[in-house]
Length: 119
Image (tube, rainbow, N blue to C red; front, side, top):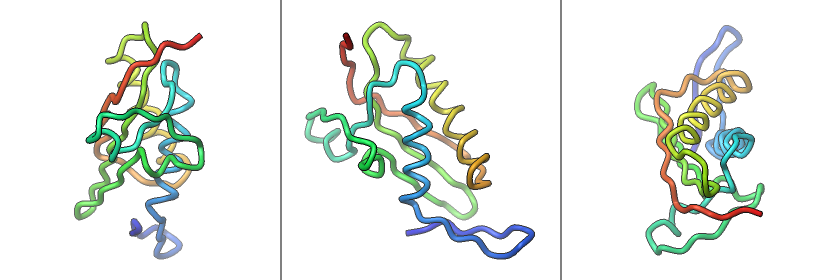
């Protein structure tokens, strides 16, 4: 699946894997994020931290008409304020996708899959 949009130079097609990788990388830069979790593991109750090559499993990209929506499944660090971490991730992901690809994201939905104690 891919996202298509028009700019001054013509038609641009960006795969959802690229969008997922950019969004996951931007999220991992935020303070309080331990890692990404798989959407499928969310249903099973298991929590495995995904590596950098697997960000696409923890990010779901949905395009409805011209609106781009992103769902992210994350694991946060113990002792951080979850609402602030989620807000920072939302802002960072929107900024990164606008800067790198030129996409305006309507919503970034954050699903906290777990809390980990980091040493």
